[in-house]
Every structure is written in C-alpha cells, then in structure tokens.
Length: 107
Length: 303
Image 1 (cartoon, rainbow over the protein chains, first blue to last red):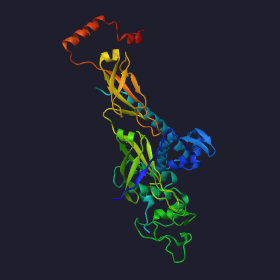
Image 2 (image 1 turned 135 degrees about the vertical axis):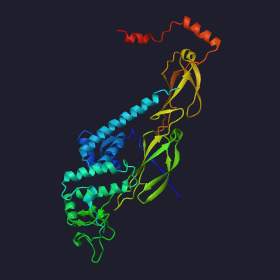
Image 3 (image 1 turned 45 degrees about the vertical axis):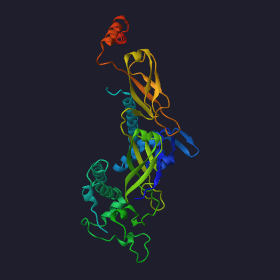
Image 4 (image 1 turned 120 degrees about the horizontal axis):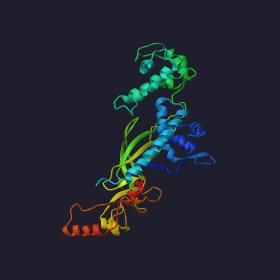
C-alpha cells in the first residue's frame, strides 16, 4: 500500500488562538465563540486587530464540550457550562499527573 | 427512495411533542453513541437516530415528513415532484438521494441540490501511543484511520516535543468537504507508554534516586541516567528523603526549542543485612549522634 508522509501540527497549550480558528478547530461558529465569551465562560487572553485571542489550553475541553453538544442537541449556554466543568476536570487531571510523577515508586 | 419510520427509530408515537422527541433522542444517543457502546452496529444505529431526530426536531421538516403519510420502513416511494427545487425538465432530481439527504436539504418545503453550500468535512480522532524516547526525539508512525471512504494508512512524522495528553492535528486529512468546503482534520491524542525509569509531568521527568544513608548525610557525586546518557550529579550533604534535585534542561524536548527538567527524587535506602563491621559502625553512630529525626514531628504535634 502506498503511504504518504504527513507532517503534524503540535498544539502548544501555552500558545494562543484567534476566535475564528478556535471555532474552526472546535466545530463552532465565531458567533458561538463570542457568545461563550459574553457569558464569561470563555475568557480571552488578549485582543488583536481581528478580535479576541484565546489560550490554546481551552481547545481540548471545548472540543469535548462541543462533542457532547452535538451528541445531545444542547444549547450554547449548556455547552458553556460543560466547557467550564471539563476545563476544571482537565486541570485537575493535569495536577494529578504532576503529583503522581512526583510520588516515589515503591522499592 | 426507501421510506424510514423516524418515529419508530426514536420509539415515540406520531403525535409525540417536541419535548418527548428530544428526551427520546437523548436517551438513545447516550445508549448508542459509538464512544459509549461497544456494539459493532452502534455507529449505524446512532446515525439512524441522529437522522430521525434532525428531521423530527424541526417543525417544518416534521410537517413535510408527516405529509408523506404512514408507510412501512423500507417501502419504496417518490417524494412529491414540487419538492425538487431547480430540477431540469425530465431530470430525476431525487435519483441519488436517500431520505436523510432529502430532509437534510429541505428548506421552505423544497429540497435543495445536494452540496448546495460549502460544507466542511468531518474531523476524525485517533489515539497515538508513543514511547517516551520517541516523543522526545520525534518519530514516524504508521496510522490506520477508519475513514468514511474506507480505511486509510497514513505515515505521520511526529516532531520532538509531543507529550502526555497533547493533541496533534493533521490539517485537511479528515473527511472531504463538499460544495467547496474545507476538508476536516485528523486529531491524534497522545498517550505515553509507561517508562521503566522515568515518570512524566508535562515535559519534566522524575526518577527515584536511591542513596545510602552516608551519601545522603555527607553528600556525594553519583552517576545518574538521563535521556542523553549518564551524568554525574552532586548530591548536597544533608539531603533528606523526598528532596528534589533538578538537572536543568535534561527533560523532554518542548517543541519550542527548549527542554524540560529532570528531577531526581531522593530516597534513602538502608542495607538489609549488615556485616559485623558495618553493624559496629552503625552502633557507634547510634551512641554518639545527637540527631533525632522525630524531633520536628514531636514539636508539631505538641499541644
């Protein structure tokens, strides 16, 4: 079978992403992204000429929330609530991984 | 075109209200979603459920669907000719449509031509397990992705810097777009295989450094393993168990030109059997030392 080499793009969670690109990655319209911002559920890290810019760390929880929204036909407000909770879970999982890494293994 | 009984798919009566339809859909979506159900037919079942709900939740589409009358599932039928928007004379407008396509494109009681507007292709998700060394140095992996047009093998170059929980995107390698829409993407979810020596936190690494009591008390230069080969680490005198000794820039590549750090976690070990001389020396130490490791604990718990 012929295979072609493909380069991948690493999502650097410390990077930033514009509203349009965030919507594209997560399967949301820009209007939905801005609505989440209005509700205070998505907070931009700064603004550039094209509009608000968000932390790339929100991509993973937002994609998970959008998945649930699509699956269960939820509205944008519920999507935002889910996002907030998933974001919290992702942060807690990250902290657990960090603490586990620092726990000595039993001899 | 084959008729599908959308009410039967959702398990609701034909006069079910909007709430009952939504409730039935959510219940079935939870049960049959391919992420949840291990049933091999779950994906097809979920697709049917989603198709039925997409039509019945929209009052206009539901009314149009109801106007087709009650039929048996699988029964052949022709949609009303006036539903064909922009059909050329003699053209079989509905030739390559199924019921789902018909209602997906139905607007104001008219079916539009398929792919009327740009529609982005579907995104795919897959998981990718990497060894710690491969994540650090970068690697090429061969991936089988179950695509809508069959299984596809992709050779993917993973750059140095991927780590646990991170996502990689293969832009434009997902499902094909339609009507001029972009292709979807493939997202790879990275997990790192457990390593015999190191534990991972982001781009930092941790390992246990066992020290003899005298090495911990007096300090020592000890050889420790790193991803770049062994190096000498100076253990400061008086190092307690749990102390973290940092080897700067000896962790994983970050993908931004830098490296994480490597931490040696001090663990003081003792010999399980002593030679007569060792016993003599420990006994002498026990008699002469004023060190009491429980002093702090006593102070903290004192009323």
